Image (cartoon, rainbow, N blue to C red; front, side, top):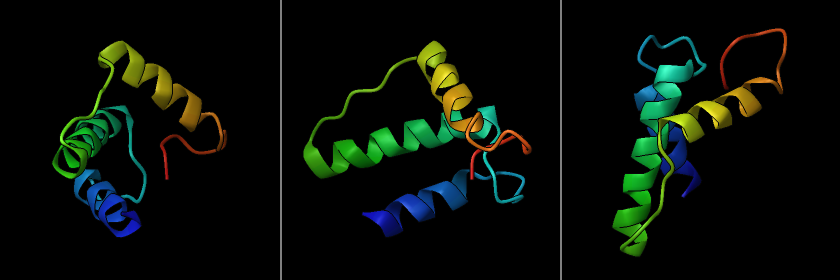
Amino acid sequence: MMLEMEATFTSCDANKDGVLNCAEFKSFACAITENGKRRYGECTKGGDIEDEKWYEAYNSITSKKDGIS
């Protein structure tokens, strides 16, 4: 599962800078949801507002660099 998540992260990192910006994170969230649906038959996901709040929360962990690594 971790290898799948790493591959999904890499494929969603459109500019290949090693971190996900907000747009890339939204793509990652959708892809992870699709992975969950394939694995478990169902998976829930919030909308854009929830994704943006999650992005802000994760992004705050590394305050000196914008993006999620």
